[in-house]
Length: 224
Image (cartoon, rainbow, N blue to C red; front, side, top):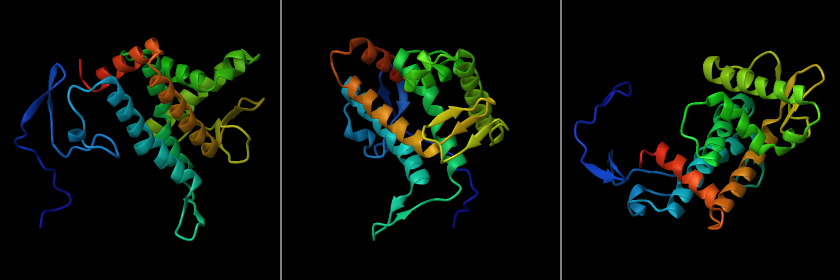
């Protein structure tokens, strides 16, 4: 029996033309939770790209995070929650802000911090009209440095960040400049935004939005 600790090297896989590049094609490669690559015709059209994007982000990230933080129903209908899941959920969803802003604007560069903040503003548009610009800037800085970078680089948030389930919004900041996050509401809000964004993408009249999306999708998937 092979050891579970082994690292397996794939010696030979037949390549297939994938867009303008050569990309590995395995007939049973699962490209979304619902579809194999063989379910689609190549090259991918825009409608299929939108479907793949939505099923990947919602199915493999936000839906999983939603179940972790808000629980799932067992056979009797009782909600079974996962205690102590807040930080794991934030690990899952914090990449959403930067990703969605880059797709929305069609950006293919490396300005991580800038587009993370743009993503937060995009998802929470009220921030643009908030009268206390200094508080908003502090919130964005703490969310990026104290939460996003904290979790990704040393697996914890800064001492300015507090995870709470008793605040009425997804994210807030106190007068003492403490950042509050309610992961339960945040995950629901992100899923709602994703659904709305994908509906807009499927509207053939939203030319710029669709062009920007496809530019980033093709870049991420090495199609051009």
